[in-house]
Length: 168
Image (cartoon, rainbow, N blue to C red):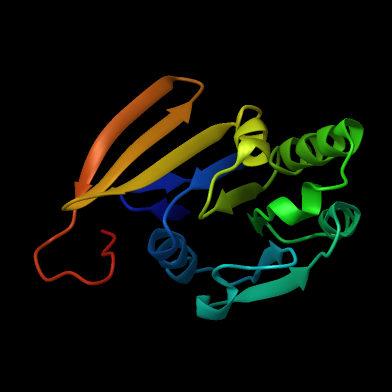
């Protein structure tokens, strides 16, 4: 089980857009006996801060990332979005990538996440089983959780003096 603030995720293809501190928090709070796969591209915003039981693989092209995912055996896969991977990508390759994320998510947990949304990420989220958007607001975080049942919105308050995110 993975928690993003107070939202629990398990199974399927999940997309998460959240500030850097929230992404680090849910990655560092992830616990499992078996290592999860962490895939990133050319420039990771948070890899240096990630601690835990992860097998880290880097892909410098979208084709390399697809190859990494095709050979993945882990039950949980975290993929950090990198817009640079899609610069010379044609639509069919992008479509293959998204369909692969959906296929892997049928029997495992896939979390495709970013600290900075862009058009490609937004397109990918339209095909996710679940999309969680977290935006920093004064005093806390606004959370929009979209799945097949609809949209749930909530506010997660930051306690006074809290420097890091606490998850219950």
